[in-house]
Image 1: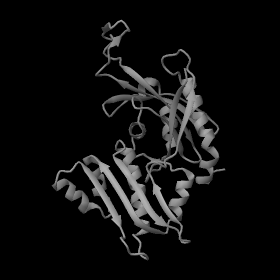
Image 2: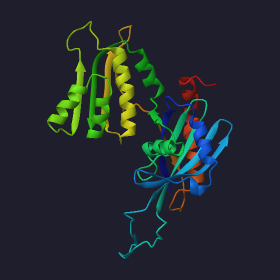
Image 3: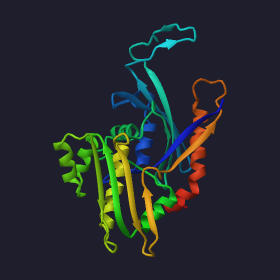
Length: 293
């Protein structure tokens, strides 16, 4: 029976730090297994396996659920508890690949596994860093080129859900603080912002500010469970070409088919092959985008 695995692409950034992610990963890899475990977002997370070959790190993360353990059942309708020792839990595995020259992370997408937020927070804690590790979603190359080519912005649309994202936006000097304040006054769980030049043909919103805001919002979305639901830019190039860009739906993703046979859990060998194939499918594109040979 065939299955599909989704692989997402991120660029890892550690601002204002003298240590690189490659060094953090190497330091964690050097530790014995029992020293790699950290509590992240109320679950135990650790680097289970990791290997380096030339410029590629390949590895597997485990997220261990210690509470709310499911029951075991059968097709006859019988159920029973899963008996676990106090130090045991139910684990979910997440494969990844990290390319050192481009700083690109390919991460298996899994609702029950290690999320991008937990991945970043785990290595921040393991590295004892004073700054955040950011996983910036990578746009597909055509979307990135179109974003770069926009010289006039006519409309910018944002919709977020959840006060956490609003709090982060409020801390940014990006001109939407009054919208956030209004949403808090009216206790509105969703914030929708639409900035437009209206019918003024030769006018433009501040292009640099909009691009900076778009970058920050994609980062915010990744840090806060995809709480940015809409992020769209409408504008034009110097040549007058109209561009409408959806920065949520144009993120880079690969869907890889695998065949685990009768195995009820997907072994790392298959997931490792899938994440490597996702990288190979996009390698030339990513090297072009991030100027790596």
